Structure formats: structure tokens, C-alpha cells
Image 1: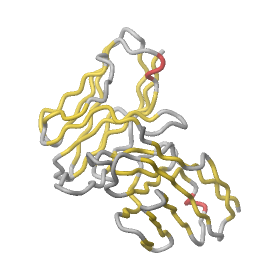
Image 2 (image 1 turned 135 degrees about the vertical axis):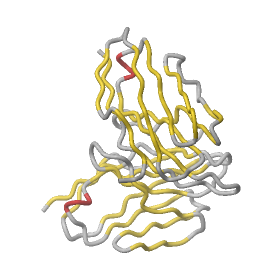
Image 3 (image 1 turned 45 degrees about the vertical axis):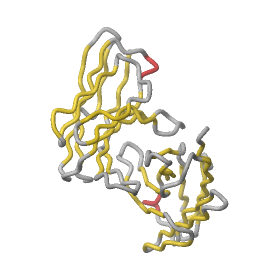
Amino acid sequence: GQNIDQPTEMTATEGAIVQINCTYQTSGFNGLFWYQQHAGEAPTFLSYNVLDGLEEKGRFSSFLSRSKGYSYLLLKELQMKDSASYLCAVGDSNYQLIWGAGTKLIIKP
Amino acid sequence: ETGVTQTPRHLVMGMTNKKSLKCEQHLGHNAMYWYKQSAKKPLELMFVYNFKEQTENNSVPSRFSPECPNSSHLFLHLHTLQPEDSALYLCASSQVERGASDTQYFGPGTRLTVL
């Protein structure tokens, strides 16, 4: 079967750094996506990794290791507005996205 | 604003009602999707329309019926739903290209409650 695992909930402090992990087992691999979803809103695209390594985009970075079936999203200089759910999704051999259940990130002052 | 709109944003219906959800994308994409999002569960893909043709239905119950009249509009017709169908229904669109997973852009969703 196909499976995406990520922690259900994480808590971090404003101004700190947090790493959200995602492990996957899929039939094929055609890229890994991270999305952010605020409560009651649409998921919005954050990052896409298809090759191993780190992709940096401002305060957010995403890392991929295809051999380990592993990715993480790194958020630096946390702000209260970063409180949201973070969804990991993997493109399988049919280019269909397989989704994780999301990680709810709570930022405390 | 993601360029994908959905109406209504909230819907309460009885099990014998018939209603429709509407989605419109203003991004010029060639594929549209319906997802179901339940609390603490992964997004469930319900239907995919690629170039207006349905390519996936993922064994969705027949009480959900999709319609895609053109590449910009997508409907989800609902009838005789069950309480367990209560969820957030998300529409998304993307530009499908060969040999790559495409980034999907989501609408704000319709929060559906079935009584």
C-alpha cells in the first residue's frame, strides 16, 4: 500500500525553528510537495522537491532524501501567522498525489 | 486568493435533499479535482477531470456525481447523502504536463454538514 506519515501535532515558540518530518512509501516517486493550510482556508503550495537536497525559500526550507523516503519542512524565525496545518504529498508512478494527514503546528508567544 | 473559487462555502442538507457544489478556476489550467477532507485524515481524491474527461473516480459512491462542462468549471452533484459524508469538500486545478507531478491550486472549500 501507499503511505505518508507525519506527526499529528507540534508546538513551537515564536522566533524559534521547527522541523516537520514526512516519511513516505509509495509506488514510484514523482516529486514531493508541502502545502500550508490555515483553519477554514484552502491549502496553499509551499515547496516542491524532486531531487535530493535542500530547497530554500525565505524562512521556509524543504529537504528530500529519496533513498530514505524522507522529507522535512524547516520553518525559521517562527511567527504567530505560521500556526497552521502542514500537508506533505508525494506524486506516485501515475503522477497522482498521495497525501499525508497533515501536521498541526501551534505557535506559542 | 488562489484563482480557484468555490460556492457555497457552507452547506447544511438533509439526507433526502439534492444539492450541487460549484468550482471555477481562473488559472487557465487543464485539470480539475474534487477532494474530501475529513478531520485528521489525509485528503481523499474523489474525481479528476483532465482535458474535461474524467480519468479517476476512486470508487466514490454514486450519491456523488461530478460534472465538468468545460475546463474552467466543475460541479459536484449530491443526493441522498449520509451523515458520514459531512466533511470539507475541496476543489483544485492544475496544469498537467507530461513527465512531472503538477502543482495543484485549491479553492477554499465547501463545509458540508449532512443531518
